[in-house]
Image 1 (tube, rainbow, N blue to C red):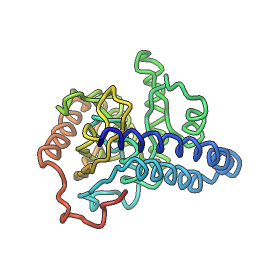
Image 2: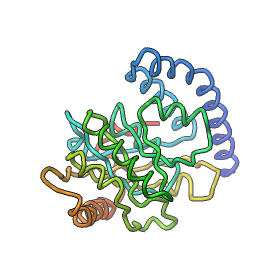
Image 3: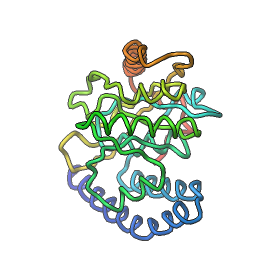
Length: 252
C-alpha cells in the first residue's frame, strides 16, 4: 500500500513538474536571457522545486541557519546520498544558488536553463576542461555568486562519507571565499541510488560554520579538503535534526 502511494505521488510529481517546466521555462529564460533579471528567473526555479518536493511528500528540518552568509559569496560543500538532496539544498541554502553540474547532462532545455542561470558545467574526465570550468566558477564567485558542490563526486550508497575531490575546494581558494560545510540526512529514505521511486520522508539539513580560505593558496588544497570533510562528517555524526530544534522550518 505504501509503495503504491509513493508510486502515485512520484508520477504526480513528475507530471506536475514537467508541466511546470513547460510553462515556466520560457518565462524564466526570457527573464534571464533577455531582461537579465536573474532574481525573477531563480524565483521561478524555486517555485518548481517547491512544487516537486511538496507533491512528492519531501519535508525538511534545518539547523545552523545562523551560518548562512548575509553578504559575499561562499561555496557550500555537502554530502550526497540521494537525488532529492540537490532540490532540498537549492531551496534551503540561498535564494540564488549556483551549482557545478556534470557536463554530460542529457536534457538540452535544462542545460540551457542552467547556463543562462550561471551554473557551471564540469567535465571530470578532461582535466584541462575541468580546470577551465573551475576558473569560470572562481570568477563567478568573485562576482558574488554562491555555489553548491558535492565534493564526493557521486552519491554514496551506504551513507558513509566518501573521499572528497578537490575541484570545488580549488575554486573557493582561487576566489578566496569561505567554504560552508553542510550535512544532509534522510535522502536515502526518500530515494535510494538506482531507484526511480520517491517516498515521502523528512530530511535533515545541518549547516556548519564557514571555513575561511583568505590568504591560502592551491598548495593548501589537501589540508583544506581534509578540514571541510571533517566538518561535514562531524555534522553527519550529530544525526537528524529534532523537530523542536527549528520547527518553523518543517515544510513540504
